[in-house]
Image (cartoon, rainbow, N blue to C red; front, side, top):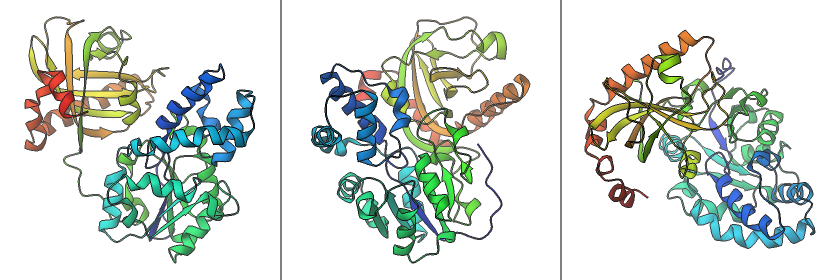
Length: 388
């Protein structure tokens, strides 16, 4: 995570993108395009999603029509997919940290604006399903309300005008390159939260690049700091995942000296998309052994440059034997840090042990300790019914 540049001045307002920054729109887009492209004998490739991220709806549709050589015009394609998207807006989930950020800034009286390339009507529809969002924003501006969408700076300058603020006093939080480029061209400070994995190195013009909204530190920008961190940990809405323990890359015990109990990601792809890569902690239940403290990483492990997002829990207990194939259930209750690369294996190992110490101490705090009794750790079906 890049360090923020020294502040030139204190910032007084925040301009936020919507799709990919506050809402997990990418998942809905992928699902709709999968269905539509099958009709044309094509298969949606999520690896080329970068071609449409941050684009206006027309630009994105044009790119798809051209890339997949579809036998229709852009307007015809838009007419086909628009009703399908409209049916799905109610299902878009807020990204981790989005509700926390909006509530925090609103509670401290920080003026906020939404600036999105989506049409204004779509923006209003999407945020309607998220309680408290609409009234939290002093201004909302859509791509159809300006002459040129991002990467033009026009939408950001218009947002600043509606906030009655100087562009230089605005902090923009964006997930796309067009958004970052437009905000910088408007003379604003920009925090980038890349919505696509392994893309952070492209955001060189941003003033700071963070892994997710959970990692935002408003005080770096002269804004009120969050007060919800507890002893180096951030409480999160608990989530649950489980399955048989599988053989991983063989580096946990052999390379790191840390015996992780890896889980298969099969069947959990939607869950993994919803949660940023990073280091988390919570409780682990083994079907025949008991319940233990646990720290885990989710992500690509930059030091080893994984090609797939993995789930690697470390049960904080000394076991006498392996338990491959045994049912493992996890209750994830807190967040520590984003995943990071390291200059040496020794520094990686040291950091992992630091994460262990933080987790062990945090799980004794009543807020976290109470989840040791979560039903899912003993009965996954029942807990999944309670927490869909």
